[in-house]
Length: 119
Image (cartoon, rainbow, N blue to C red):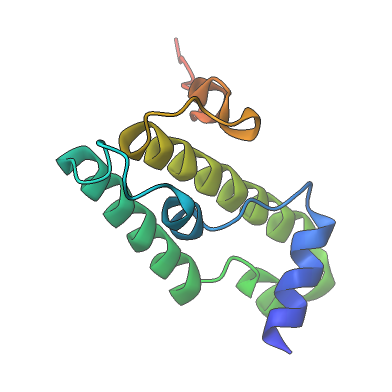
């Protein structure tokens, strides 16, 4: 039931990014970058994020606040999608000598939090 709920929520949010751990596992282990410390750190960060996401699912707000929280759930799921894309992009850059695939070829600054300037 829980997986069906997550899948339904995921389908409702604009596209879901696959797990950065799964993406990292799909890269060639024969690549010279694979054994580098940067690649090991990127894969560890992806694994940590994936575990945190499992331990603290973002759809919990819906359970707590009912139907009025759907906007909050959608925002949390979008943030999680962005984080998965950023981690997959970082994993690719650290672990592969190949060009970035189209879905990861973006400016990471577009997902950076906006800094507000107060007078």
